[in-house]
Image 1 (cartoon, rainbow, N blue to C red):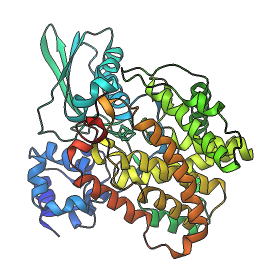
Image 2: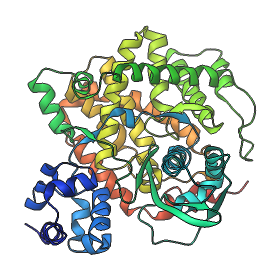
Image 3: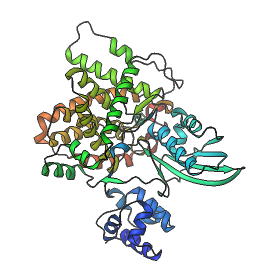
Image 4: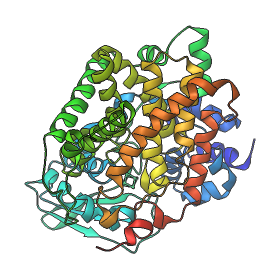
Length: 475
Ligand code: SF4
């Protein structure tokens, strides 16, 4: 047993807590706590933070015992796909959906407040104006007056997207919470006791899931169906309906995107333009790109979209699926199964690495979306699980190192085009996987681990801070 595990056990005993009591406080199972203490598994970052809070020590104190554990931390399970595919307004799951959710929970828990103060740190501060974080917070907390402070200087924060919510009554602070917007619209309160999302999937690697599916002759969507609740398919149908609606609305929309960059909406013209002598392949590219532009432009306009896995990358998955439905007349049921397959892939990335541009750069958003789209196509084309894995692996592998550098913090340049390019890349990935799957060398699990490490090595200026890369270009 290493020092970190011994420390958790001795701190727990010194606080007079049983494994069960500690598990309840941080929202996990006593089996998981037992695994940590035996050294069979390591707590995730979020659990480390919760443990530090409960024990009254800093996360650094817990982590510095064995810093190398940060690269080896293991998930204990995965949350519902409902937490991945969120229906909401763009343009950014981390910067609009997450803060919106945090404010709703906080205000709901403190109904006696008469005013609020919200302090934004890290990426939330640096790109919050471009993403409209302040606008969304004020809209969510209305009619309560809300002062928003952008703190650009504080670096000692637990997550790049951290915010403090301060509740006031008669000008006096009566409530306070620190919240992390951890990607895809998910939030984490620092003490974790306020929002606990159960991990309903026991497996948390592709290898384990594939092993289970092969043993029980299941496709990935059937595996998901075994774990999700009774309303799951209704919800996924709703997800697909919103995706379709955002494509249709986007194709019907014209004008200039908000934010001041004077970016023209192009989905409609892309959809209607045609080469004089257009080949089938060129037409396919144009159509898929038009659909990806349509969703991304709806997102940039603050309209309703589905995170797949984030707002910024919301156009990739619907674009390839809508194209296939138009071309090959796949039923909504078949498409929904493909969506669920994509969800398993996205959930694995979310659980074992990140889907947040602020945490790991654009590889975590567009790279993940591309992998999800490739897996979805693999399901539609009835590929077996090894080929689906390979398609998803190819899709993310060639996004490794992709930086997040949106100009002016707006989810427009390079984000919108990037959705279209990733959609085409997903189609290529499936095609390659169909022919070359038996010669592959790198597993999906390994590429996710690499993506996480690459994200950690990326300079913070390339992780949704709009301080470097394309974001330095001034028009
Ligand atoms: S560059 Fe990528 S990660 Fe960054 S906001 Fe745009 S789509 Fe999201």
